[in-house]
Length: 467
Ligand code: FAD
Image 1: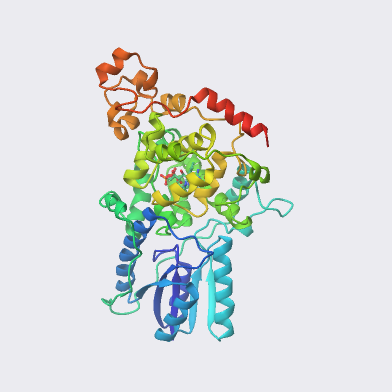
Image 2: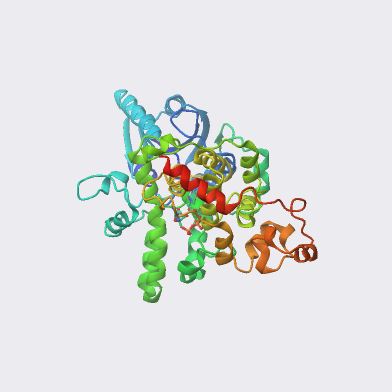
């Protein structure tokens, strides 16, 4: 018998329930990845496609070692699956679940069609600590606030990670690649900046636990220090599971009780990812529909010039420009700066959060179907458990606090590198003599701020008051 594993966001061998179940079927296994053109499935952004191509390459080799052929095709899921099933003589199909409403529709339809035709179809737990329907409030409702969600998740019996399947035969050299997923030219600059694939994900986790866990709670907010795990793109593509991260961290806590509080903080951040998926699962479309209904009536500004300046890191607000340039150069942005950049766009510039969400979606290697829109809605104030609208970040004081020596700004906005620390976050207020000495000319070598932070803050508050 031949079993087919339909891989989606689960590009790994270990802790892969679908793969292990296919191995238990006892026959030949083929793995299939589809660059889906189905309407309900959000196509990955440009930077994520760059990552995906390499992750598939790495997975294809690892599967080949186990005697499993990886086939990569493009088209609608149903058509591609039908063709592969016929060509390979498949009797049973396995996949790990995904959680966006549009994705679930596709999967459900396929499941019932295949079963009708006599195939055996099984779906398995996806890349979650707890699947979205397994956690609910006392009234059986979805959570809308993170802390009680986290409290419940903390006590949930999270499934133990599974081993990789055993080798099924001689290593394969054949490849079933139709084509890779066209990644944009601009993504080539990411080459050499990231280690991609399952082995790299495991290494990133263990390097983090060995070297940075202890400093995580305090260090995670400082963009100039490299204190976070950088696991997000690996989690996004399922090169590693949240369960593997959870249990590896737990093991560390047991071995070294003194790291317990640090590890708890890390686990609670990891839990935000599950919380985003909780929202994704229970809502219609979090990438386009505000979770708080009244925000449907929000009057956003349309200002193509300001939006382009924001995208290109030319807002005149150094920490935001640094973040937007880090994003463009690396496909990643530090979490604190993501918040500041999103806040400047949606509050000070009053530009619709959906525009920012789409830009991030295209530029982030970790652009995630749940985390990205949920975080944008959170910052914009229309999300669940959103920061109160009146808490509008001041990116200058935030910069002074979290990048006091200006290392992060100097790295990404080199035209400001010779400014003294005191002015590096607010160059337009610096005395002429200071600017001259640092070779900075406001309006020429570095832009004037797009908006006055104080008046634009008030404008945002007034606009909110209209709702
Ligand atoms: P760590 O601090 O090491 O955290 C470990 C893991 O926990 C992360 O990889 C992530 O999976 C999860 N996590 C941590 N913080 C958060 C959070 N606030 N919300 C949800 N999950 C979290 N994250 C994405 O994975 N994809 C996105 O597309 C994305 N878009 C974002 C957009 C905005 C506007 C904001 C404010 C945040 C966004 N985030 C997104 C959340 C967060 O910024 C990243 O997960 C984090 O910066 C990734 O770096 P790390 O892996 O080193 O994080």
